[in-house]
Image (cartoon, rainbow, N blue to C red; front, side):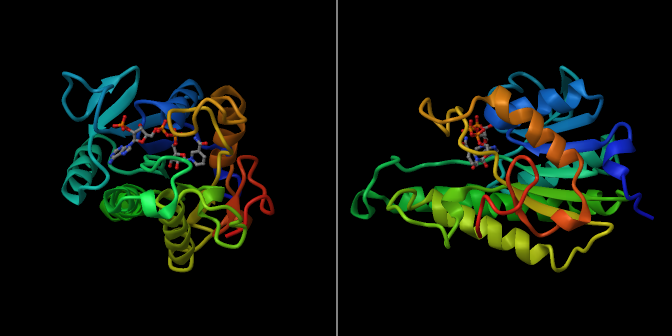
Length: 244
Ligand SMILES: NC(=O)c1ccc[n+]([C@@H]2O[C@H](COP(=O)([O-])OP(=O)(O)OC[C@H]3O[C@@H](n4cnc5c(N)ncnc54)[C@H](OP(=O)(O)O)[C@@H]3O)[C@@H](O)[C@H]2O)c1
């Protein structure tokens, strides 16, 4: 039976994050490791150079994988199944913003639409499917999708993000749909926006540093409650800042 305060009390949660070699994923990985949790990360470049899948680098189990490729996600899940046997928290972090930020529609190329959908949307679908068996083995599984205000249809009032925006809107809809199949109190599925953060994706003009964002974001991820299931939250775990 799921404990009401499971997330606060349980030691050594098993957390899988996609895209841990830079940006928000890397910072989350470090924060969770410092907090005593077990962390595994999916990486396709950097970080794992020379290593084998399943390697531990700085305490993190490194799994090779490209979220666009279901076979590589399945293989990563098989590897982690042999090492851990289950996961408690799956964080869909890997993402791309392929287009130029100010591109007009006519300048936006089809390969950029495809890359955004393949990575951000199908990547989340692939990873969820591949790791479902390991999540099922957790007493209280959680799935978190890194969402974005750029994927909000109802608050859209600019002509930017032709590729990224629709791909994140699709992620939001997938998460919300899944939240009506996998139910609390056992399951909790949420979309969380970190805010506009200075990473390779967010750029140098972004309002927030990684340091400002990671602690509230990590706390929210670890303390999710059933009331936050199926919701689009800000990094503090609140609804209202972001609309679907
Ligand atoms: N930064 C922001 O302001 C902001 C705002 C709202 C939401 N978000 C969301 O937060 C998440 C992380 O963003 P970020 O700013 O940290 O981005 P980032 O610095 O550009 O990092 C993206 C990460 O995703 C990985 N990745 C990309 N494609 C992949 C693939 N096919 N397979 C596996 N990994 C892949 C990258 O690995 P490689 O090094 O191999 O490319 C990298 O580790 C994204 O989902 C983004 O949409 C960010």
